[in-house]
Image (cartoon, helix red, strand yellow):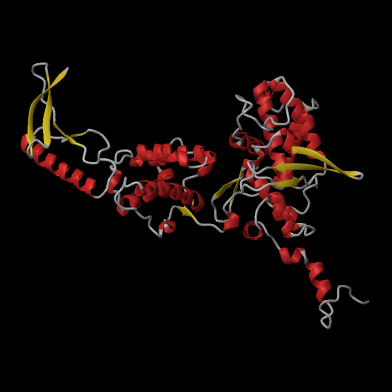
Length: 454
């Protein structure tokens, strides 16, 4: 135990300097500490270690810290010291729940380790510059054994922009509440760092290449390889083949296998976003009849849609998606959960709780690896990795490449703008519409003529 001894006051009892002296004889005396009334009013007292056992140095440091706190109070500071954890916990609830998981992961991995020991009240541009260098070079550290495989040793511009945008949000909120003195700025040229991947927008994400003959038996394109894996899983689930892995017989692994199969093929046939597919419910999948034809219609409600806008999606494989979901997937759902799915139940729930959504990254990665399409080498020599979003991209590109569906209809189906479609997906748009262009302008004397005389 220790007691308060060896104490004295400074500046007419404004500052109490003391040292906790151990009761055990022969023990060395500790460093001096100080205590003053909190000038910001956040709490009653502020206690700080002076980190020295020399009385004269302790006196000088106590006066210096006292003056700093008084200046903070006069400048309107609402806390004697500003810690990162306090900022994060205070302003996180003001963000949408949908981004909490990603923000917490960034905090645990990048922000908290860097800012935790700092008093952010006096944070400066120099501190931000050091963080930018730290963040960009983070995955180049060989000791970072927790590095996800798909990240490589470089960071993309989009990832860093998201990181810096949310970090700026927390710092700006703290600045508005007088928790930091001045709002720091990020260096404008951070994208020129040599560790950053600079690629055109269309080439930043791994993609499935377009193929003119995906149904050919001799075709070796990536989507053909994935289709073979889909058929193998489908045959196993229907009892028409032996499992490629003995673990598939385990109920949990069988359910996850069926989940990955249904999740990926649904995205490929509808161009729906993966985050939207994970929020779908059984009642959102409907069958629409139109004479002798029938179609799979998927309702993407406002709460499901990334853009907060309602839309309906028609599957590109007629009614096959509906029968696949209410056939194979419904049987696997009942086998695993032991009950019939209701209209308001999640289509792809977590294996632990049917009321919560499931994260599909790992299972999709395993599916792609088995099919041999998880990664490929870009022409610049770097490695790109395909994800579930790559299937959405492939579906959109195929719809545009076939030239029978106008870009406006594709944008409605995908739930995005024409500008985004043109920026990320449009391929040979003019060539795909060559017939309509030529037939209208073949006779230069009448540009409005729609038919060509023989």
